[in-house]
Image (cartoon, rainbow, N blue to C red; front, side, top):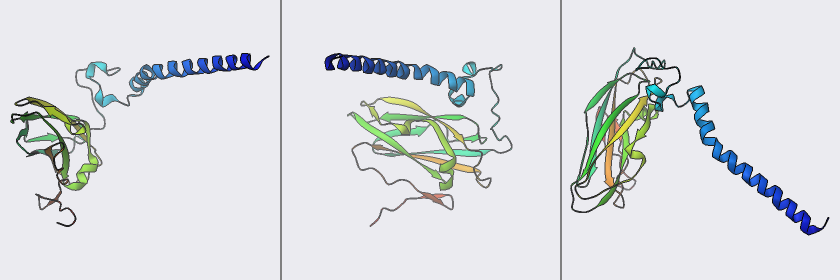
Length: 201
């Protein structure tokens, strides 16, 4: 068998491997969805009608600690001429319970601007237990002059949060992208939010 024929056979084998890899990669999405549905791994992101075996409009989450309630306060700060505010000032939630709050944004300038929000928590140890499943802070947004938008924050507070914590303040700072990024907001001292100083200030 000549070298040319051997090369052709090798190219054919490699082509079959490439096609097999492509088919496997294409099949991963439905396989992943099927595994998630069977195991319930992504159960918090599913609507009630999508949860396998759900028989009522409200499915019970066994990880919700109904013996505790935590007040979550929502704070909004705009660095620049924006309207930026939460739809509600606070919510009462149980640890492990999925909750959602909407935030309103409006560009009140006569020019298009891009911006992003950064979160902070008080007390600071609450940040490790505040799990955001959906948040406008994950992305940058561009708003036309006068444009108004609403975006959600969906979150779950980990039941492992210290029982000493009864109130959490979730604070966002909304700033123009390309401008000076503000220092990450801060720790709470006696219930007040104290700015974190940058080195050399």
